[in-house]
Length: 275
Image (cartoon, rainbow, N blue to C red):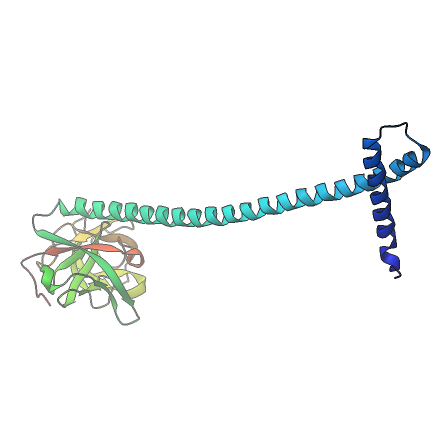
């Protein structure tokens, strides 16, 4: 049977290897001087054996590297899962810490009031063109009523306008339907703070003769009985006096960033159900 051309060299090498191994085995039993034929066979067999041994060693090393890489890949997947879990836990701890800091600031405000207070979480926002409100997760079951003032750590948020058993809607002081008795803290000039939507608030009914400057602090006047006196409302951001007008046009930037509200503090006062 003829051997294909591409396998002939392999066949010749195999035959030579078999012959050389036979001669070497025979010589190992019968130790004699190395003959010419044995020398020639040994000379041919040595590189063939070296090639085979090198190939087998390379194959063995490649297999070891493959097993090592498979093990490393499994270890990497395990480490990635553990890293993702630790990152998730770290984020939860960070969120808990930040929430604790916000609640601590609310508790610091709470200590300044004689009336009972209730912390609540913001669960929804409605900042449409018509209404500026938020929804909190406490209601009549926890003692809240329509008209109760609502605060944040930075200042006044607004007042409750609607309640259910476990939720309440708060009208923000920037809503155009919001009107709060206010005064300029420095000059004690009194007026009415009205919401102006996304523009913030306007302070109305301040006489032209009163001295009002940008940067003046605006606080609650406490006249209507809804908000205690002295609560921070905002800061004067602009003042203009029209010729012939009786009152100044005063723009006020609210102290509270309503887009970032997460927790609030409701004051449980005796003046509930105030329209």
